[in-house]
Image 1: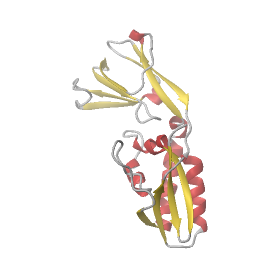
Image 2: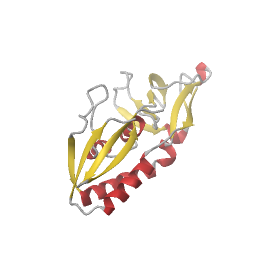
Image 3: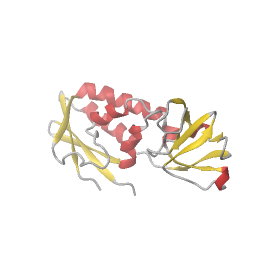
Image 4: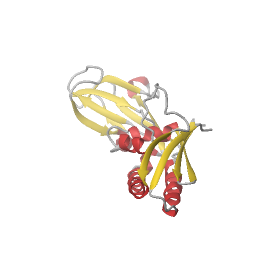
Length: 200
């Protein structure tokens, strides 16, 4: 079961608990194929860095005008819906020269389309192939970015076919955002506070 946390949205004397898995939070971190993810993290007080101390519990992190927050949450739901079919899977990949042994994480240095490839399946829900002009551990000038969730296979110059695999994964955002939006629409207060509490 993915680790979960709770963002509490407080509107006057009423509260709504937004329960999200760590995977849900990191779905906002798709650098190439999800726009404005960090802004949405900030919106819900989720703008913490992995490995550092998380936000304090039971302390107000951000405040919003209720109507403005509703607009932003609607935009977030639309953005996630546009990726629904793709982010509802976790990905792995394999190369023909290893008989398609499956890998998670990232790998770099193989040759593809006249450049050096770097493939990553982090964060979960994404599978990005970047192609750079030099092999500097993925830090050369990138001249192509391929969404391998859509393409599935790619011919490399030195390792044979690069193939992508997927397995179904749960996305909590769709139900959770719909419930939060419904909650906020029923409130009449102008200001909404966001804070966190320990999750299950």
